[in-house]
Image (cartoon, rainbow, N blue to C red; front, side, top):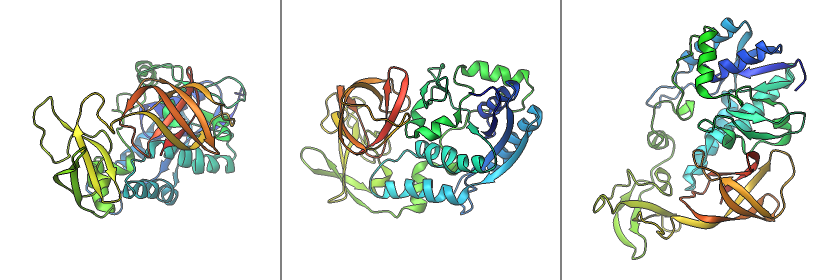
Length: 358
């Protein structure tokens, strides 16, 4: 990074982005903060997205740090690029990851474009990830392995990475809260947000019920196709789900789990959750929409991958299949890889990129 940059910090109102702005200011950069106004729950979905409180928390932090602050309205882009992506995916029986798409399309997409148009040279966030030294577009896992968020950056392109700054990458969460307290930031003890803001405190099921029409169908037991019940719509379920299926389990040791969603007859497939349950564990999977943080795709060979945000990296073999797609063979079978979710690919702790499960 240059010794002095003009950086716009995406301030969410939380402690992480506030400390990111604080550290950049203390490092001598020309810093400003902005809140991305993405969703205000204007259609009355049950629940609350506390955007007004978050704006006030972000503004108070900016004032305390001594930087300019403004609100950037991205509601139309967010609806078109994230909400529609989410709803269309669920309507097709997929399980999309809106957080990963939000980073690519909003934070480092339209928000980054807005920042560059207004004279900023970089965009900073409170992600727990590390940028490599120098101008090359390199991302490493965050130093805090319990908070590492490199997974959510897997679909960024090289130009986006070049102008991304992650001031918290070398810190652990307790240290971030300590810095916030010492700086007198009012949100030093604010609870971390869970999920994505536009859903607020509403369960995903309730949100989907509002926007995606019910399409009832049979719940079938895999293997013998015995009908065990009825579902309200495949979009309410995801591979590996055990709770809320609507079919009682026999015992605590014999619990039903979702092992498939069949579009041809709108059937939800379930089976007992046991080691090696057919359909639940996969040794090989295809990914598409591959994106590489450094711009260059790796050739065929061994890599590591994170199949979900909280999961450890696992060994795999990457086999390119065509432009933007590949076959992935895992060293050990992986559980509940739902179509629409993200596979992040690594070379040790370096994030190479990622793709979407077919």
